[in-house]
Length: 262
Image 1 (spheres, rainbow, N blue to C red):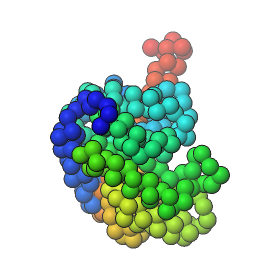
Image 2 (cartoon, rainbow, N blue to C red):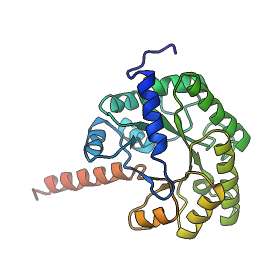
Image 3 (tube, helix red, strand yellow):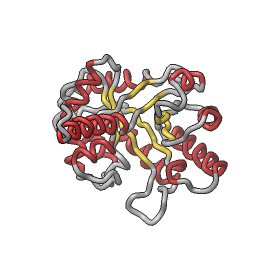
């Protein structure tokens, strides 16, 4: 590798193995996604066994758009600062990979100290809604191969965006989502993330048909953690909602100050 690593390859490999082992269908990895060092310290201090970033929260904090246009130096810089204060594995939400070649992407990820990543299949830079499934599968395989060549089998959480992009009716979305999920697992992804997929029956159907670890966006007030366990979900993410809660609390406090209510 042409870059210096803040953590040894052996330690990165151990953290990646630990992160992968935490993906257990029926006993999901719980992730309260963070966006900076302060939020990471709060979440890590609660005893979470791994941490994840939220690209939407990071983009908001940096004044960027969450559409794969963030400067890679900014995106990976946030990851590096967070990883530097952690002793648990970190997985980074890095949108679609910022058009980086797989080798460059992996080198930046490992140099930042992360051992996992989210990669989505929305086509942010072309004319289509989604990247063609075959092209995305090839990219995921290339990222996995590049990481293994560096001695670290990173954990890829492959995001399937058929449900958020709403292509076709509900049945067509499910069919395409399952097709992509299976293809991404075959390409080497470790977990499939059908973002915004909701409803007990639909989540259960997706998990059963994909037949691999599935990450679900957790929405408090909908299905419970116990429900997700029963559905054999392997990973639950809060995504950007923790950041939204923090902003709402800050707004409420500032409004109280302005109104003289403190």
